[in-house]
Image (tube, rainbow, N blue to C red; front, side, top):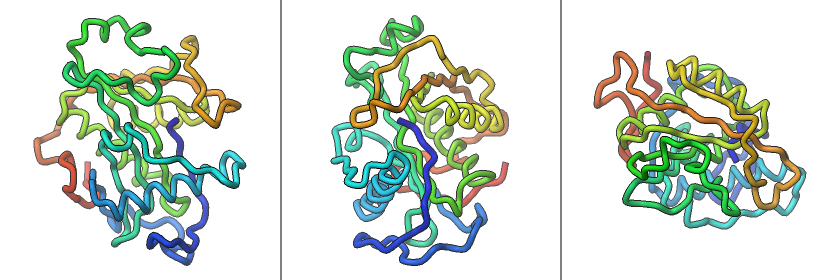
Length: 234
């Protein structure tokens, strides 16, 4: 499931801030990186779980690290050494045929998108997108999408999908259109399986055709894991 979640920053055993951060931090105050740093990944996972407890009214919500987490590229947004947001990017390639996280209960994207049936294209899924409220919207959210897009181009990913409630997908489509990805479609006619433990949430499917955009260069973003960059100008 792909979400933009957020609650005030609270105390945490993994190093998250104990006090609410100033409202609406600037994008230039942040660093964006795809990382394998266990400390940052731990902060991100704890923040995601905490936000889900609030958003879905599940006080004891916990989600163990899965195969998808270990294989995915995790984008971290950090303010200093504090994680304030992030997202998971999972990729399926002709060599790596494991199902994507949204491909549950026999549901397969290739059954609905003929271009995938040949097995020759790499495609992926964005999920677990989270930002604390002080950082949501505007340039920061757009910059997350730009970094996801650059990662897609670097990995030669042709299509990306996301599952989320309809209101969320409309916001994601607005963001992808804003960064220049014009072929972004919400597929209301494709039924996708409910996410485990959140069966009462109705998700829809979003598809994004990935293409290199004018002005992109090989160095235009954090495309390698553990490479950190600040907010980039268009």
